[in-house]
Amino acid sequence: MAKRVQVVLNETVNKLGRMGQVVEVAPGYARNYLFPRGIAEPATPSALRRVERLQEKERQRLAELKGVAEKQKATLEKLATITISMPVGEKDMLFGSVTPQDVADAIQAITGETIDRREMILPEIRKLGTYTAEIKLHPEVSVKLNIQVVAD
Image (cartoon, rainbow, N blue to C red):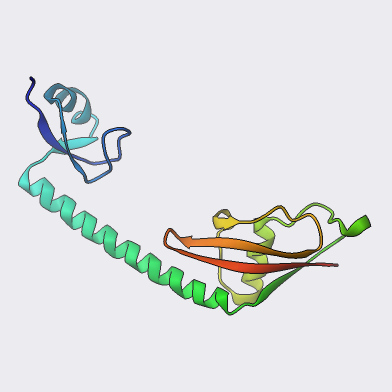
């Protein structure tokens, strides 16, 4: 059985591990592929200390982002309903539909908070009425909002 070497990954590699993780690989794979491309480095004590410092900084950054997301959630929960005016045709059908960008613009107009439209889970809105949207502010923080669509 071949000897395996421990390496510290400098970037995420599919089917091998995430950045900063210590993994065991075949010596030839490390020497011929991972090291020359800068994907990994030998798992020396100094490399392990550096990785630990980077992981601590990342944990602090994620904690800050979660705090910001919690503040945004508190602001958004104060809104009972967001009202969006849209032009309508026959049978209360909208011309087009309400998009996540429309909702993000309405939230920004009301609260001043900038919300990324890609973080919204929005049902298809093609008629007048009240709908529920979910906004993921952080992987651990989300908020549900009521959206009322009214005629222009």
